[in-house]
Length: 484
Image (tube, rainbow, N blue to C red; front, top):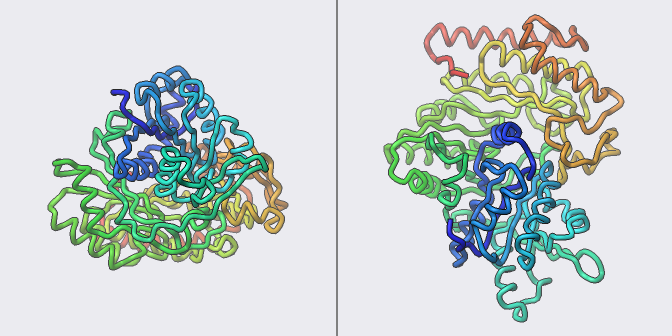
C-alpha cells in the first residue's frame, strides 16, 4: 500500500495477542467496521484520502506489526481516528500511545459509542489523545479538519460535537444535530478494507440502513446515542449500495445490521420489490424487534431471499420484560418464532440473564426458553449476560435498580462477564446458569439448572403448544426446517 493516506481510521483490538485469540475475537466481531466506512466515505467526498486499519480482523498480533501497518498506510497523516467501544477502550488508549510513537505530530482523535458517553474519562486517562468526537461524527470530523488547515479562521469551541482539554479542564461543545437525511451520506468505500483478513471471499455484504430507535429498553444505549427518531436510507439508496459493492457479481450474502430493519413496512415492501427487479441472487439476514414480525412481513421477506432474522427475546419472564421496558411478552416472542418458522426463516434468538429485575426463578425460565429453541432445532439460541453500558438507563440508575457493581474495568463489559449482583442473585448464580446452558445441557440434554424447576411449568405448557403448531406446519409442508 502506498503512503498516500492523510487520514487513518482504526478499529481497535489488543495489540498483543496470539493468533488463536485473534481468531476468536474476529469470529465474535465478524462484521466490517461499517461506522468507520461511513466516516471514510464522507472524508473521500470532501477531498481527503482515508485508510482503514481493522485490528479486529487483520493479521496483526503485536505492537510492531501494527506500527509497520500504520507506516504502510500513511507517511505523515493529518489525523488518526480511533473508534471506541466499551470493551475496547483500554485497547484504544494503548493504540493511541503506539500511534504517537510513530507519528509524534499527528492529531489523535477518539470517537464512537463509548467515547461519546465517557469522553471526560478518556481525555483524563489518554495523555496521547488530543480530542474526542461525540455522537455522529461525519460532519464533526470534516469541520475539525478544516480547523486544522486554517486554525485562525475557525474557533475550536464553535465546532459542535467535540470534547477537548483546556487550561480550565475538559471543554465540551454543543451537541451536534443528528443527520436527518441519511441518503446525503456518500456510499461506504468497502474497497478500503478489501485486502483485510475478513475480505469478502464469500461475497458477504453488510449494510447499516438506519439510525435511531423508538424502543426504550433500559439496557440498550442505541436511543441515547442515535436518538428516538427512526431515520433511514431510502430503498433506492440501499439497492445502489448493494450493486456498487457487488461490483458485477450476481449473487451474495447480505447482512443488514440495523437493530430494527423491519419496523418501516412501506420501506421494506419497496426494498424487496427493488431487490427482485434488479435480478440479483441475494440471500440476506436482518435484525428485528419481536413486535415487528407478522405473517405478512415474514412472507414478504422470505420471498425476497431472507433466510434468517435475529430477534431479541431477552427473557422468559413477562415481569422482567416489563421491568426492562422491552414492550413485549413471552407469548409474543413465541408467536414471532412460529411465524418465522412457518415461512422457512431461521429465528436467531438472543436471551439475557442477570437483568436487574431477575430472580433465580426468572433466570430458570429464560434458560428453559433458550434451550427449547436450541434443542428443538427451531433456530439459533444465544444467552448473554446483562451488561450496563455507558449511556444506558441501567448504568445511570445503579441505586434505583438495586445493583452492586463488582468491577469498573471496562474490558469486562463484553456481555460475557458478570459485572453486578443484586439481592436476588450472585455472580456465581449467573455463571452457573451460563455454564449450564453452554456446556452442561449440551452434553446432557436431560440436565436441569435446578434453581426453581417448578417455576417453568406454565412456560413449558406455552412452549409445548407452540411446538405442536410448528410441528403441524412441518407436516402440512407449509414451512421447512432452516439449517443451523
